[in-house]
Image (cartoon, rainbow, N blue to C red):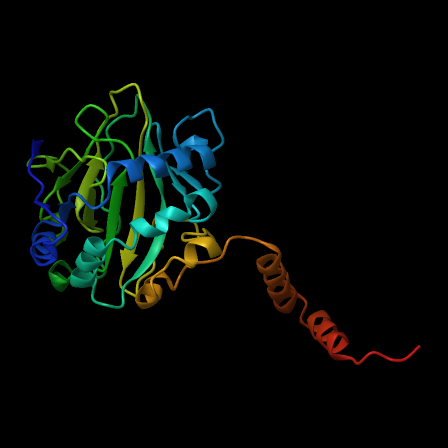
Length: 295
């Protein structure tokens, strides 16, 4: 494993997109002030302490993704509303536009935490090719990208992510890690990779957890049916965060669901009654439309 992932500043979207197409992974540097990342890390610790401590309450939707590793979905609301600004960084948006076209959407947002003592992951891709038995599958442009935003400085001690560059262009990807590369990633930088490229998390040999935000951006025709249970609330955005979305970028958040509340609960109840008790539902609707009678 050697250091060697291509790195780009925020103004180099064209070059970064070309490297992403070639290698399947790039690093963008200097996107956010380290202080801003620290503020969001504190907000996450207060909202979901289980992202930092295995003994604390965990996210509601959580998956074990290795020994002492968890993947949990994070609602962008309340203390976490500022995360919406991370997803609207101009340099990040420029790269996503180049790589996915103008009509891409965010599919999910969450945190992956690697705790002290975590072991190396198995090599994997975040999704198989679209057409696994067709040669053209390896030639296609990306349909989904992972955006990784570390909340602490990442190095070889607390466990960077290593990649096999170019494996998104191979139908039968190798199981060996020979030729893998990695980068140290400072707070304020991010990694972006093609869902098809082979990669794995390294062990966390430090005494502290290594949490990172992640987001999935994808073309509008695609949905992630591999990494989540069917009813997972993969992207939840509260009113406070939604109000911060730029007018020309609302389309990228089209799949966002609202925070659970009275209105959403009533809508869910209405759907359930309509699906499973249609006669009762029709009777309720007739009753609701009936004019009041004088006493």
